[in-house]
Amino acid sequence: MADGKFRQQSKFLNDAIWNYGAFAVMAASGVILNFFIAAHFGIEALGVFNQIYALYVVTAQFAVLGFHDSAQKHVSELDAEPHHIGVVSAAALVLAAGFGLLTAFGVYFLSQPIGFLADSEAVGKGIALAAPGLVFFAINKVLMGILNGVRRMKAFAGAQALRVSVILLSCLGVAWIEQPAFMLGLSFTIAEVVLLPFLLYLIRPHPTDFSSGEALRRWIKVHFHFGSRALINGFLAESYIRIDIIMLGIFMSDRDVGIYSFAALFIEGLFQVPVVFRTLANPELARLLKAGDKQASAKFCRKVALMSLGVFGVAAAIVLFVYPYLGPWFPDDLVNLSYPLLLVLIGGLTVYAVMIPTDMIVLQAGMPGRQSLLMTFNVLVNAVLNLALIPLFGLYGAASATAIAFVVASVAINGATWKWLGFKGGVLLYRNPE
Image (cartoon, rainbow, N blue to C red):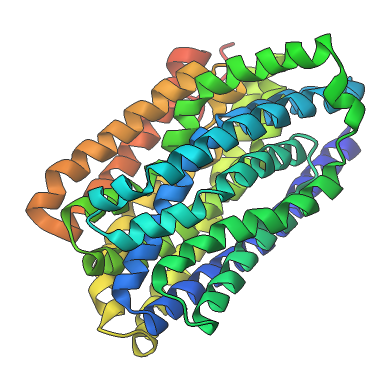
């Protein structure tokens, strides 16, 4: 038994190392990409690119509609029935392809109004080029959910690294052929097209899984029911840390958004530190919660939370130390203008880093509707604070609003585990009553 526990912990740490390797590639690609866009195209173009990125990520949640969460959860629970994984996966892929196509058409035809709302023609043109990628994104997201569910985390990490690397290379290519900044939106479509065959090779869905008759139809209903209730959570979870940028795009200029988005780039990178632990924790949480072992679940959550906080603290300290030295490499005093914003955002994110690894615990317990309700509350708090503070304090209002929202979200998540899952005091404070 001790040997089994040791092997389980060793695998968890090994998977964490691989995924942090992918995170390092993602972080490095993000820094290089933002540096390159700011230096080659200018700060205004940096604002345009990050608005396209934020809009792409948010609309992508409609494309995948929570089917990746359903695939991950249900595949995680099929250890004793591996022969069912094929049809479970096929059903999720069918749904993702259909809804991805609908969303891609919708975003493409709405791209001009989106540009009008953002007061930027370049944003509208860029999101139109990114729109076709939504079809492939939805399929790829489900395939990666399956990889997560069967705990093939090395392959999962490789897919993450491949995606961001292709985005970076595509943007460099746009500059090399001397295209305008809005063409950077095409990089998102190219990345998903390149990623798809890689994931299909890893998963290798069998044609017979798509013609399984009654079993396929049953799992399509299961995924649709679960995914439709998880949609709001997925949509809001991805938009949660981008609400400030989206709202700044409405209230302020592309240049101001560019300054803020440079600091937000590092926040998004730091955000991925606890997200790696969440990705690794989700399949284990699904199994522990299904078994009904509250003590083991709480102990696991506390352990992951401490690991997340420790790694995040080190990463945040490195960023705060290195950031000022980037000044000479960026134009228009970009680093000095954005550094105070970074300090405010990191303060709030430090608290949230404790809860991020378990912020999908309600969904893993089989309650996607309540998970969506929880995320709705967190996003509303973030949006209301940004709406109130941006007109008064500009960039600093957005940073303060987001930092406060991170703290409120941490309390809300722990409280939700008390109210809905029966962890008295919340999952971080739960002790098994004697």
